[in-house]
Length: 289
Image (cartoon, rainbow, N blue to C red; front, side, top):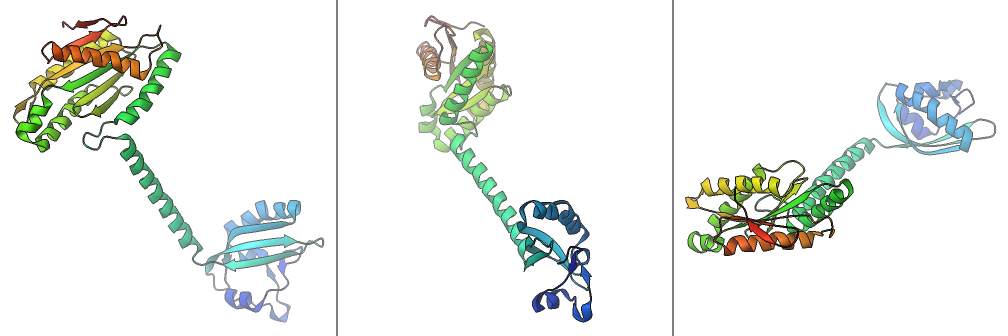
């Protein structure tokens, strides 16, 4: 191709494929071989790059036949010292289809990755985050609370006499009870709070920027809602242990859970269907609303 961008020579295959003829010294200009969009790309990108690096590789363009049909090509281009350009064109009529297939494959991979992430972080029965993801999110919330000087309170919630439900009514009914309780706990959560199924019939609710008093009110609303709800014709109650972070001792998830769980145990031992609050000095007190 000359400096004026006239085609000086092309092989027989390209001539036949495009329908253009160079017989009788007929001149074909570059802009007649490509679509308008490709010509803009050639002017703005291809030739400036050729001037700088003398070659361009793997450029996708759209070429025009004499009859006006267009199809994609991949071009490798070099420029000589005399400013002649040499074009190698690889016709790829199925390239667009390949791109579509690659995009579809990427979308499928993204969907699969999302599904795998949900499996890794979510309890399949209740849809709540699982124990492992609770640890991850609790760690983040503890760091945030320390950095921003915020309060953070944990509720450990356990269904009273749940083994009796499974033994009497079967595990299918027990699963329905678990899902119902998880829905009630989730109903009162804010966007910044985390609700998790810790294991079995035990749940954890992490309240961001909430002290024991705030948490006690939320806990009582949850306790009363469960007590008033008939699940599969069964009356269910829950016990709740509460603890807030001790900033002087720089609580970890394990230490915060340990104090919440100790408060829960006290609620169980003192008759169940109760809320017990753990103070930062390790003492516990039964809540009176």
